[in-house]
Image 1 (spheres, helix red, strand yellow):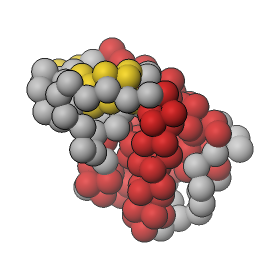
Image 2: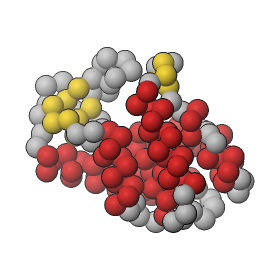
Image 3: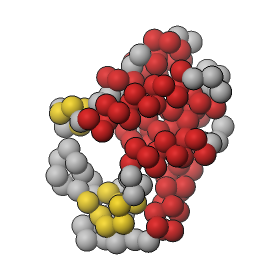
Image 4: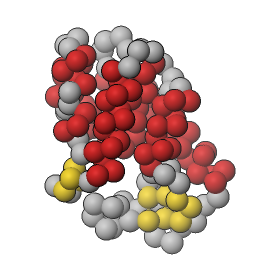
Length: 146
């Protein structure tokens, strides 16, 4: 499955666009982030254009799609896929791989899997309002009919 425009828009909205590298909001340091939340190869002081940010976003999504496909063993509708892609884009596949969310999902318990989204609203042990909003948006998308 591929990420739809709705999924891309959710990621863009949650991440925001920053053309100058900034430190991780939770740690105030590593990893440095740029564009729409890209971290690969980003260093302090780095600057990019909007076009570069778009390319980095699409490259990151293309990298995560096969990983998400490998982890999920049940059928997903497009909205469920897009919600999980936003989750993975933000947290990485190792966090999804070890999560109760994935265990419940792969057991076919979609409703209880959806209940897990709000639990992932902390970074460095601190609850972040931006993550709370993002998880609520992901959960709503996951539960909506495609």
